Structure formats: structure tokens, C-alpha cells
Length: 244
Image (cartoon, rainbow, N blue to C red):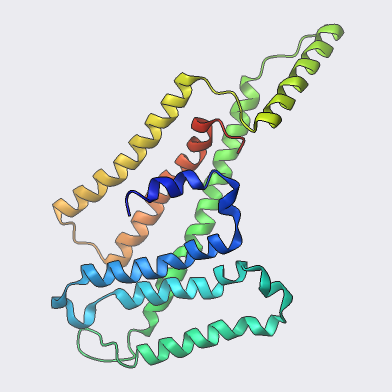
């Protein structure tokens, strides 16, 4: 898996990753991954407290409510058909929780856990939208501040405008912006440091054995690491010189 992830990261900087079917495949994959990891790490000693249903049905609910409708064929169908996947999902959930017990062996009582993952996902989407919006605003202001003052002479102004237009045309043809090697290396180091911090923080929490509610810890990690990922999302194109 770790040999595949770097290629997937590079793949997102191509137009191929915009294929709707490829995107849906990536979005449904978390259902399988989340469910299996939760099942494998739950341990048999947890019995009815295993959390694989929360991850499996939680991510699946997000897929059924949102991501599934990224496929183009839904636009050709009547809106009423969009309720069919949700109805099938609810039927499966009701059946599954009729035999999935809690720690006391009771069934049905854990159904409320299916809304935890969607709630975190949708709140996180709004939060990261705000974070990226702020970053873009800051980048825009810094970019305007670093621009050179335009000359006052009319002939010089025309010369500058012509030169700027030629540079912009060249950028469009190349599909990239000019970034110095030193800056590219700096951006790359910053990205590596950011992801290294993710690993170090996770290891420290595991080694210290911090006793925190799983849902609270999950929310903390998502918003903390997600903010760092948002930063790297702005650093990656700068490192590669991409026009993003």
C-alpha cells in the first residue's frame, strides 16, 4: 500500500484523476479500507465493542448521500431514483444492527453511530474550505505586495506590459510557472517536514498511551492533520511549478 500512495499523490497532478469513475472508485475505497482496518485492529477481546460497523456504514452513508451522484448517468435519470441507494443502504443497516451487539450484548442500540463519520466529514469539508480560502487570500495579498511598482514613463509602461504578456503566454504554453530550484527544494523539505510531524505526533500519542475518547481523538486528528494537508496542497504545485 505504501508503494502505491506516492504514485496516487503524483497522479492527482495529472488530468487523468478527473475521470468521474476513477474518482468514485477512490471515494468508495475508504469504505473497504476503513472497515477492514477497524476490524483488524479491534482485536477479538473487544467482542461486541468492535468499531468496524461505525467506519463501514459511516463512510458508506457519505458515499450514498454525496459521492455516488458524481457519476454522470444520474443526470439522465429522474430525481426520484436517487432515493433508491439510500433505501437499500437503510435496509442493510437495519438488518446488520439486528445482530451487531454492544458491550452488553444488546442489539439495535448502536445504530446511532452511523452518523458520526458523516457529521465529521461534512463539518471537516466546511472547515477546510475556510482554511484554503484564507490561504488563497493570503497568497493573493502577498503576491500583490511583492509586485514591482509600475514605471511612470508611458513608453516603459508599454514595454513592461508587452513583456508581461509574453511571459504569461509562455506560462500558458508550458503549463507551469517559473520557480527557482532553491524554492522548489525548500517547498519539498517543508512538505516532508509536515508529513513527518504527522507520524511523530501519532507515535507520541501511541507511546504515551493518551486515554482519549476515540471519536474525540479522531476529530482532533482530522482537523489537525487536515490543516497540515491543506498547507501541503498549496506547497505541492509550487514545488512542481504547476499552474494551480
